[in-house]
Image (tube, rainbow over all chains, first blue to last red; front, side, top):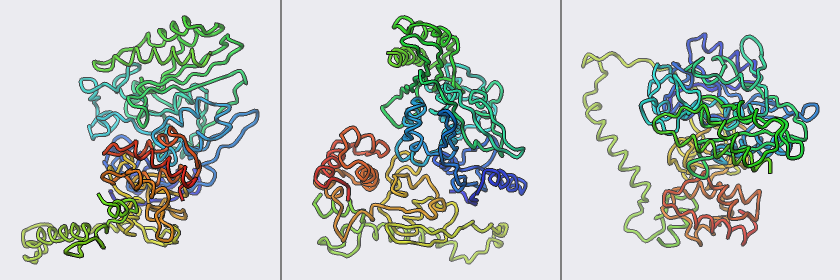
Length: 334
Length: 226
């Protein structure tokens, strides 16, 4: 592997300072959580930040005390440290009982070996798995100015919200976080900011190079999940081209606030179909105040794909998305 | 394949032929390493012969290269504490295989996809190709070489032999580590639980059914991996 120096950070603030001072010395820097994805990018010399060469300095966040813990807040909310492993998140009893959608999303990632090392923050900020980006094409995501999927092999690409880049956001946790209305605490040189999960991810129309608002020296430190009423139930449904160990072709994070068999409020956020976690607000509105019947679920699912704009080779994702939404709603309401 | 070869495979030893009937004491690994070295020397000879510092051919002098960053780390490997000056860029697998000569864990893909490099880090299976050696500072690592007890293979390793779980055997050390971790937290897994625990270990021979049978048999006979 390319030579680099590892620096162990003792606090998030120190990590930010280490990054700034290394950059001031003309070195390129990457933050390392679990490193499962980062090390592959370094080995392949694919830029982790657009236009940035393979890192000279890795800032290790695993040495920050407490960043790998899940703290209970008042009234049933949780604060999840950015360095909590996906397996710790999936097996946490509080997460399983209160936020099933999140536990199921974490459980669906990769393999046991990846979940033991991979982290919450790493899963949320991982770079896209588009085969053009990963194989060294000078696309938007690598700091170039083309999306090679448009006229290329776009089987796995976006059917919503694409252009100029047509990647799909690769995170399973991201749709679950948006569906739960989580907020993200970001620490950087100017202090910290807290923003809703939905505002953390950015459309390629706003910024074609990045998938989120993080600047070079910022760290996703923790995630805050508000308590939900006991009438809320949730689930994550992920469809893959094999049974395990890959990204979603289509996924749906669904959170329903139910009163008997009537849905008070619904959140439906899709994964695998857009450059950001894709919330389908029109479809959600059809559910408000309604009994969830098979007929209504079918209508909601049709509304969910109404704005789809498939590319040449991914039109299959439209009926697949419709089916996933319909079945998930019926199963969760039943 | 006879039982002795199979045992060598499941214990991670590459010196399979050391006490097998043979006309020479050379192991397969020694032979390959020797051949490789000879090729390197052959390829390098012209440069040595010309005693050339680069200037004679009008080349620029060799540039000074910054020293490779290293860090002193202490970790427990198969029960033994080790302090090592590790290059920051070494993966855990490079430390184990290239520095400690623990060649049981294999490199198949070197990108966290195949699972042949699986070792236990503080008891949890991880891909040793996808984590750095310096990140294992202060932690405990168990490789396939650490599974035997008093010269005896573990019940799980025995079951792998009995059920012909290895075909080519390259993925076997990784399968053993993932299955060991499973049996240590769940001594009587179902068929589905075994498959779930081994989903990150690919077998290019596709001998999955035998591997699952072996893990289930080890659970039944011993109630655990060790």
